[in-house]
Length: 324
Ligand SMILES: [Zn+2]
Image (tube, rainbow, N blue to C red; front, side, top):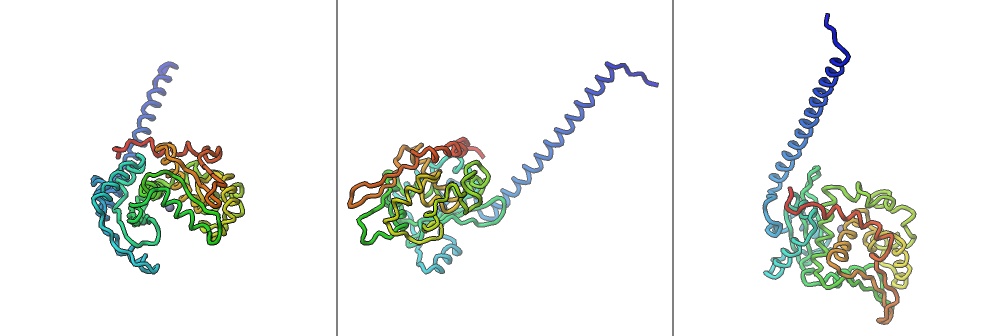
């Protein structure tokens, strides 16, 4: 018969508890390691499948547009043509890619297969997801004409498509400074890639209380006029409705009319406007003029409601650019 004193029993229990904890944490560590290894294998296999070299500098990933994308534009009645970059355009692209936020750089390095430039394509840019795996791979196709536009010129042109202005003395413009349109457009499109990889619009606090699903805005931030705009399934509005529309926009947390299309566009717009105004100190003003005289100016980043989402942008800037 073995006699165990009270002290020895306590010691024995402590030793067993220690061994148990050690075995359990070793087991969880091993499980995590297996999971990390399988993610690495999937990443490497997917990159091999799409001929994507994560070590290749982003500027060297300019390639001709895929036949699938070209076919899609042709079916939409367009005749897109491959655009060969000039030396100036190539150096503009290099600067813009280097200026993207750290999280964008990290995601693009691993997930961006190619950048293509076309003349005569209908929209400004198109991000294509090439697979349906949990490790997505992207191509981005950009209208080459935007190399020669400032961000203000490009955005004004886009904003004016929301209105029918013939015969009116009213005119809408956007003042977002004289940096390149390419920078704004690539900030926007590559945010879609970050979002498509990490699902930030859906899972972060960014959409909470604002979106009930991808395309449905909560009742609190969905003024009646929103659903008449072309970004929410409507048509260009008579420009006389612009003052009420921008007045409505100013009661919501959205930075632009385009933000109201979906939570993905909302995130891409917010990040782009945030980067332009807060990081690059550019203006962001939507201006309505009547016979050349300012009758309404809306600066979204001066709105308390819009600013309440600024904290959600930190996650894009806290990742070291060279990591991963
Ligand atoms: Zn978009």
